[in-house]
Length: 95
Image (cartoon, rainbow, N blue to C red; front, side, top):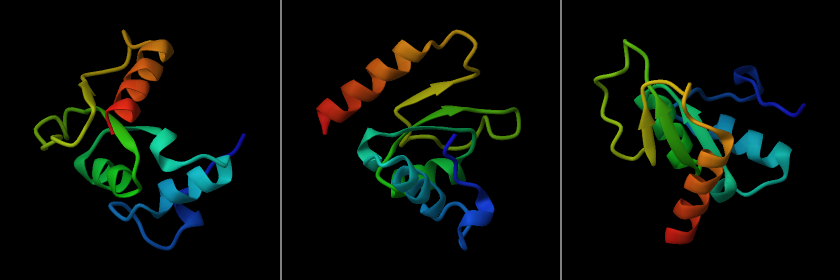
């Protein structure tokens, strides 16, 4: 398993370092990544890294502005991997 933890980078979100580090470790381009976040700070970090981001909000973040998210879900219980793959393909194709 390849991962990036918050202690692997100096700056915290909304700085994109955590996502840039994860993409480098995976050997993928940021444009090929789909981030799942629950806050506007995480969304800012993901989009600053050049990544698409979906939001699955919490009760404390539900009222934040998620205008840059490619999708917003109250939870992921009805979302399947193939749904997310198709979403990312459509976003990449539209760029």
